[in-house]
Length: 302
Ligand code: ATP
Ligand code: ZN
Image (cartoon, rainbow, N blue to C red; front, side):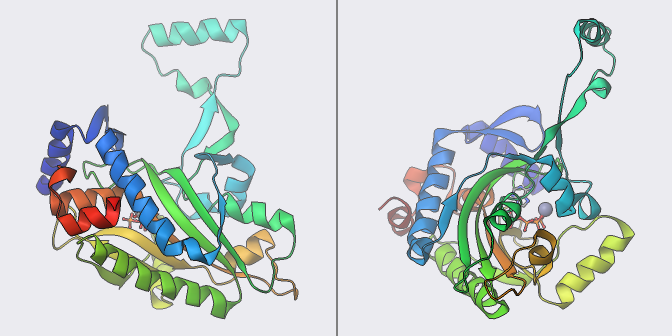
């Protein structure tokens, strides 16, 4: 924890991250953003030849899709929903009075049709399902979104609003598992090219509660999730900076994603945690990008 706090303090002092008074909710400096932009160009150069369809969704998604996704079954502790004032003049007066008195005023807020996006790929599945059958050659999509997770922390690498760049592949089992393996290999190469020490390990999602432990064990036993780990605040407890997920046909069945031959599509996604990657670079090479090793600067900025 101390290492995390001291790294966070150094990030604040240098101005790379800007304190908002809420753990995990930070502003970013131009220099911080420049690292993310440069790393995204490296992603583009690496994956650009695959012909993925680029789609950008805002950081909020249709609440009906969010509900259908089952997120509240698995990760209720992380979810965020958008609520708004929906009352009349009279209610407004009551609201202002409540705030004036320093009382809890948000209880009267009503849920809107928007939930905060928990992972960049969540809005994609219903969108692709609506288009009809997927070509036997498969579907490949390039996504990036701010994501929300309610996990306040002093660890700068655990934020509540952060960006995830993702490639999502839909197709046969063989196709999507090969896609995932390709990106595990590429991920390792990319990180090495910017001077980061990496390691890949099997992982699980933070499923909620007692039933969640079973789901997590099952996910590990079946090798459904791998993470690319890089030291950020600790050499022993490394940080997951990419994840490689194989959903089997779970999302295909849930959303009605079918291939042209009528079979249910298998899906896989690879996610880059953009803030975590930037933080790993700052932790490894120092807080001033001008002083980073020449070979690393060359890969990022040419
Ligand atoms: P962790 O085990 O560290 O909580 P996760 O399993 O929840 O990670 P994923 O759901 O696979 O992570 O999300 C994809 C990627 O998004 C992660 O590999 C990571 O790089 C990034 N990420 C996840 N949660 C956060 C967070 N709270 N802050 C910053 N980046 C995150
Ligand atoms: Zn997490």
